Image 1: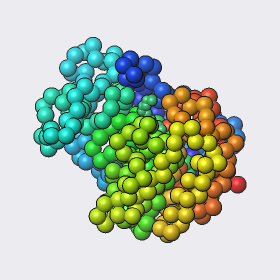
Image 2: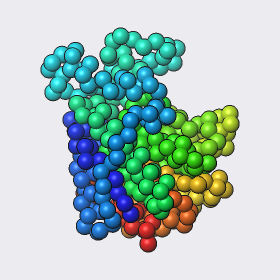
Image 3: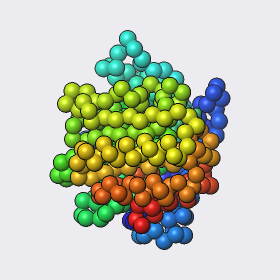
Image 4: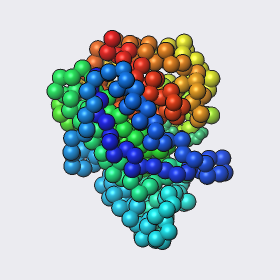
Length: 345
Ligand code: Q9C
Ligand code: ZN
């Protein structure tokens, strides 16, 4: 399988995130992508290339222009507030929840940080915009290979994307790489695109982007949001809105779920994808379902990821894989590449 690697990913390097009342070292670290890259090379999974250049128009198909403008300038605004900020990650401190206005764009940078985000665990750093932009270009390049007839392609990038919505960042995500790829497939003439999200955490950003759409079906298997991040979305009764009713499917599973039960959800998800008659599939490939993951609660083991790849291949669809979460750094390479190898067998 062809991999499109974001060589610029290292310029997004958060120092700390807010976790249980403390600033702790980031879980979402550059080594994650490097471990996957090394495993791809060691196992000779196929060519590894750099992303093509795209202008921002494909990003604007899923994100609002005021959000993209904000992201593009956020670091410079942060440093302009205080030169010492150059050494500090930027975090939001205020959020416009219920009864506040979200139509006004405040002059205050702090106010806009909160307007465009939903948690305090997602540091914005000097290279965030450059890394995220190059990452979205990886997703677009992978999609273009599939459009040209490749059976599958893998966008290997960080920061991840599936928590980023039309106009917000969070959950370590800034640009929604999977959504950008899915929309690009639609715009290139694929009538129906399925997005399957197998990260441990519900893909709230992707769901939000496509919630009222019948042309992009979103399915997610994840930890039950009653107890798991992102808490406020990902419940089974969220089925889509308006013309999109019936095209959103959430399969939450309790913390502690093992592979046997997880795989039943996967088979069910694939049944729904087959009924949708998609022309292409985008997989949000999170590996934080792994038993050793430090911030998640399923118990999948490394060999299980081969089975997942085999199951996904049986859908018989041109497939774009997009790297999402997975924080057991030393194992994330083997787990990710197992999915891809299982798919290609
Ligand atoms: N309980 C992705 O996997 N913080 N994002 C949880 C630990 C948010 C994960 C803190 C986790 C976001 C792409
Ligand atoms: Zn995750």
